[in-house]
Amino acid sequence: MRSLCLLVFAASAFAADRFPVDWPKLDRELLENYSNLIRIDTSNPPGNETKAVNYIKPIFDREGIPYQVFSLDANRANIVARLKGAGSKRPVIVMGHTDVVGVQRDRWTVDPFSALRKDGYIWGRGTQDDKDNLTTGVMLMVTLKRMNIPLDRDVIFIAEAGEEGTSSVGIEFLVKQHWDAIGGDKGGAEFALAEGGGGEARNGKVRFLNISTTEKVPRSTRLIAHGTAGHGSVPRLDNPVTHLAQAVGKLGNWEPPMRLNDTTRTYFERLATISTPAEADRYNHIADPQRSAAIQKYFAERELTHYSMLRTSVVPTIIKAGFRSNVIPSEAEATIDVRALPGEDMPKFYAEMRRVIADPEVEIVTGNAETQRPASPPSRLDSEMFRAIESVTSQLYPGAVTLPSMLTGATDMAQLRAKGVEAYGIGPAIEEKDRNIGGAHSDDEREEESKLYGFMHFLWDVVTDVAAKK
Ligand SMILES: [Zn+2]
Image (cartoon, rainbow, N blue to C red; front, side):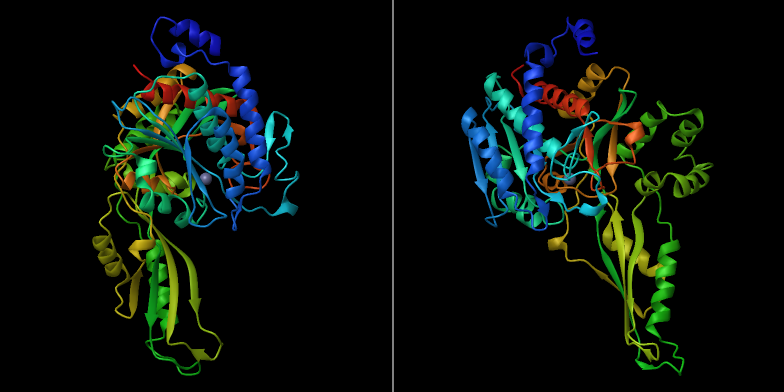
């Protein structure tokens, strides 16, 4: 497929053609470093990401790539490398995280830290999340340096600690205390590429590539019902358990209004082009006032992620009330996992929530803004970076569609977008049949070897397209 692409596009001046990469050699080194990084156990907690940084440092030393190490905690270092460009355009950041989530070893059929190579896959914790983005980023820097590619922009590589729930030692620390190093001068980096996207293939042929351009904003919220303590034998009208249960029930059944943004509108339009006629009909009519309610109901039952993409979601997750069967407590508490659409007016949203609960005995306690991920508008679909991604996708995967997407979960791109960086989530493709097995955070996490190589090629083509001298 690769040679066919080159033949077809030989006449045009694609970056891929300008820089003849020795792919078999690059793939060999990529696999070796990827496997070695998987073998370094960086389960978070505790993380111990410095071990991964100590693996990456000598690679950059050997190649003469300048870097800096920043640590808030000595065991949890971050490494930032930079290749200088002419400065005619603002820098591009390529980011991967070094930590992984823990494992339940007895649920794995292989050693999760052995990087076993079997049946065309590499097995192990972090193979999909996020040591693929991490290692391809390292190899991108190595290859740019070795080939001495002239750059218009600085290319900045960040290997960050703490993505899995402890951003305070990673992206937050870097953005707050070392913005000059990671963002650069002249208004900072223009673009960033990190985890959060990926393609889907059927029998090796990639059909679409999700590129996340935005994400929902976690706004964890608590409900506290207040009442008077008393004996369980005497019913009370202000029993907080009853009040809380009613409030939770109302919120759980509440459907906040649907709202599309540029990303989700384009997502559904483009998804329709590669879907069955019945699916396409739903995707094309989601905003149709005559049809929307029925389609939303279908999504709520059958396509849960699509349902979540339509609105700020309100999901009760924890209830804490009472301590013995014959005591009415004076307080009862519930946690509501609120995931806001980018641009949601939160004070207004909470006022609406109060109206739905309609109970003065139930207080809504919002989270501390300081410790929450910042909200920011979606990254643009008409930027040089997004256009490069679309063009590389159609070269490498003829017939595949680029789908801008909104993640329902949160990533460290939130902090970069809040600094004005246009950030795009990318990743390798997976086979359709593997969609529900061996994924990020799951037992027997694994990545198909050929897809890792395909992703390296994709990353190379995209970055050289936007950063190499034109
Ligand atoms: Zn991750």
